Image 1: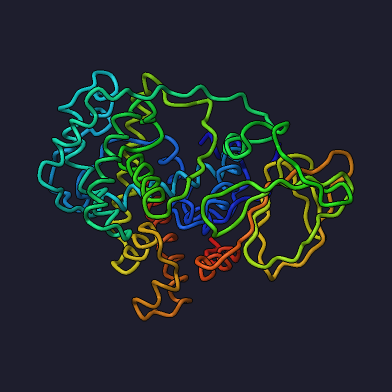
Image 2: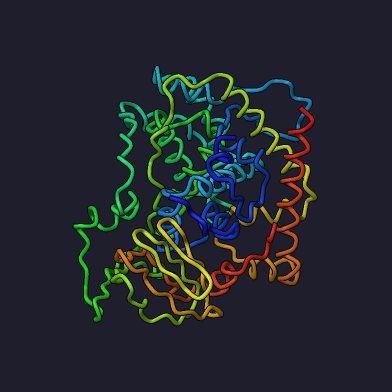
Length: 222
Length: 214
């Protein structure tokens, strides 16, 4: 991958190069619930974002809203927001999606990932009342016409990541999810579950290792 | 530019999950602006956040969609920002806090040619400052009381074990004792975030110590 070539040194990477590749290129559609593999219908979320971007298409926006707004609201409530605040912020996040549709980069991030970053930043603003410094914009930016092969490959990688996460043992998955709901230090997690801190650390490590392994296996199976 | 000292997984995951005080976020955002390797890792952690967010759902309030549709009605869509020319000493997120480039920094002398400029951050979890150390001079006040992140923006410094050049990040806590000295040649400018509180005490010191070791 390009990044590997640019940076031969691998610092303590938690996830394999395939995962980075997945995230670097990034993809698009996600199914609502990755565990419902029987549900054959896949929605091309990124195509809907493009319709919002190019045509201010409110039907496309409504479809995005129905899928993502309840997920953002659930995320915010699990992060400690009241239902009223979470409802208001979820609407803010979706309005931001409309407003920033041109900034969405389908070759490098799935819509779910993009929505997550908007929701996270909104959460910092709402719950912490502080700013979120973001890295400098990259010169590569979003392409007006994303490469279809790149977008397709990114989608595959993104779905593999979601599937790998859903295959983790429940305890490990819960730990990762809690870390992302934020405002929970590891010691607080330990206090709540009665687990010793060291065990938690090892569990997170194991979860990430397994995730990496599953990504590697999936990548070589192709 | 060859970056040798990177962010740890713990810090990147905590950054993705927004568990860090603003001053640490600033140093991390500045490092990610200079380091594509860590940016890719950071995006991987964002993707994990995307997978997590897909996993749970709930009911929206009645009329939620309609309320949102009327909010976006007539809302202007943001233009793609023009990428800034790379190579400025201060990466864009630092410029936002300084209110301009290096020439806009309001330095205060600490004596012996060393200068600092405190950057105002919104929460009290940690403080951020720029440090200017003349070539060949020692860095001031190097007892670490909590987690401290130091990002080199210009020049380089060395301690007993390592050299830190532009883009390199040093992760230190109160177990680290060393005497960094700016290299001869060019003055060394660093962005430093130091833990200053309360709320994050349980989490932050541990972030300095790699426990993934993958």
